[in-house]
Image (cartoon, rainbow, N blue to C red):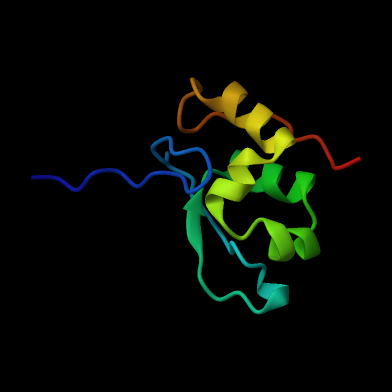
Amino acid sequence: MADAPLACWLCGRPLGSRVEWHHPLPKSRGGRTTVPVHPICHRTIHATIGNAELARRYADAEALRAQADIARFLAWIADKPADFHAPTRRRR
């Protein structure tokens, strides 16, 4: 039996050919653990929330998914293919 494909830590969709590794607790704040994410999901996390706030409030996947901008992104990306890519908007 083949192994099930890895799923993205943020969106839960199967990962495609490109995988990036995200530190839920930013490395600059002492994080060592990494989780697999799509490149677009990784860019969205960092374009939306700074490392200090990620460390303070969003090291947990459920808390991050509940953040308003991330929740909107997740609803939009839900039906896209695993290797989908689009430009990521910067934080305001």
